[in-house]
Image 1 (spheres, rainbow, N blue to C red):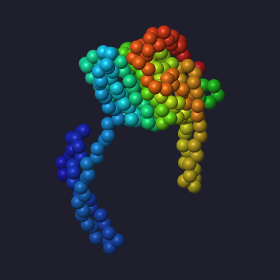
Image 2: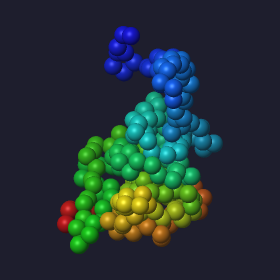
Image 3: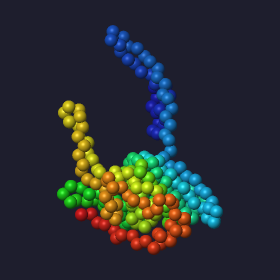
Image 4: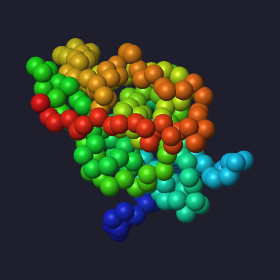
Length: 238
């Protein structure tokens, strides 16, 4: 059989040889079923009655290419003349924390704190934006009780840095960093080794993040509130 090219899709049929209990070698043909990866980011643009356009970007979870998908969504919104953005994180239980951080970098200026990871014995690791942002369009982030982990990190970073207002209900509150150790009897032990805090110091775990509004404010209110907001100074590592 020839070698597959790098990056090429695997062949649909695979030949497998199996030796049975009698020592007889048998060959079987297996057919691969198609796998479909559901998109984690969706985008829509709507005209507002009073003029202007609102771009709505929904992130259902954070996977390997979420930041790339959000970047493309922002480019689409820019082409369509969007003057206000809504980032929908409702029902987003998290996923890859690294992708939540990378998505935050799309909106923040260089040096802005994204998240503070507190570790044992008073240590901390600060993750900051590398800038410049892809967009400066005023932003509202929609959250609810199922917005958790990486989604909470993103929401907290955008709100604390005066980049967005939050609307909806209190988030889930999942901010612990845990390591899983396998024991000799095959059971597992989860040890908490740290926790995440937002740039303003909010402990995400258990308490969650309380939004600014229960319902999304008007684009005019969002823009005015963000202009009047003063972001915190950058935080350095301990």
